[in-house]
Amino acid sequence: FQYHGEHMDSLGTVLSHEMARFNKLLDAMTSSLADLQRAIRGEVLLSEELDRMYTSMLNNAVPANWEAAAYPSLRPLASWVKDVHARFAFMRTWLRNGQPRAFWLSGFFFPQGFLTGVLQNHARKYHVAIDTLAFSFKTLDVDDPDVLPDADVPADGVLVYGMYMDSARYNKSTHMIDDSKPGEIYSLWPVVHMIPTKDYKPNPADYSAPCYKTTTRAGVLSTTGISSSFVIAVDIPTDRAPEHWIYCAAALMLQLNT
Image 1 (cartoon, rainbow, N blue to C red):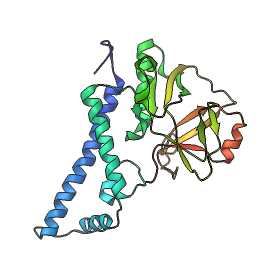
Image 2: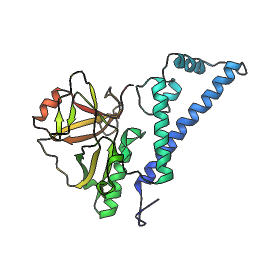
Image 3: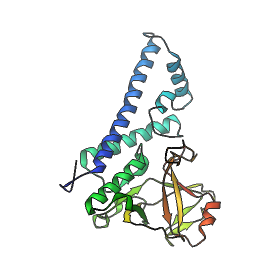
Image 4: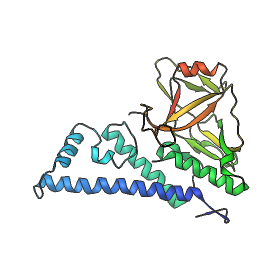
C-alpha cells in the first residue's frame, strides 16, 4: 500500500486488519451453520453450543459463538445480519475501488485504529510528530456524503458518517447542537470532517460530545483507563453552556439497537 506513491498508507494497514477480523467472523458463522445443518440432519450429535445457537436463532438473538467473534452490537439477529452484510459490502468496495470519499465510521470493528491511521498518514505527509496531532471537527450540512461535489472532498483529514446523537440533534440552521425534536430519542448526525491538527486546543465554549460504539455506552476498562466502548470526543459548537448537554447526557452513537 502506498500513499501518494511515496509513503506507506496506514489506512491500507487498517483495511487489512479489518478484513482479517471480518474473515474470522465469517469463518465462525459458516462453520457453525454447517455443523448445525449436519446436526439437524442427524449426521452429528447436537452439542450444547449448537443447541444454544439454535435456540438463539428461534428467539431472533445473535448466537453467543457469533458474538464472541463479532463487534459490539445490541441488534436482534435479523437486523444484525443485514448490518454484517452492509459492513462486508463497505470493506469489499474499499478493497476493489480504493479509498472511498467518505468513511462509514460505524462499519469498523475497531474505529479507534482507523482514526489512528488517519493521524499517521497526516504525520507522514507533513513530517510532523504524531503525538502533536489531534482531531478538530467540522460538521457539514449534509447527511449523505454522495451528494457532495468532488471539489468539496477535503485533501487533508477524512469525511466520516454513520453516527447518531442521543438526547440532542444537529441544527443545520444554526450549525450548532440543539434540543431533540418531540418524541425523537436518536437523530442522524450529519457528515463530519475530521481534520488532523497540530497542537490542537479545543474551544472551551464547545461541547465535547463523547462517541460510543453502542447505546449502552458501557465497555471494558482498557489499559489506557478508557472504556473500550468509547471512540472519540467530537467538539460541537453550542450557544449554551457545555454543562447543559452533559446534564442532558447527549452523546454520539455508532449504531442503534434496531
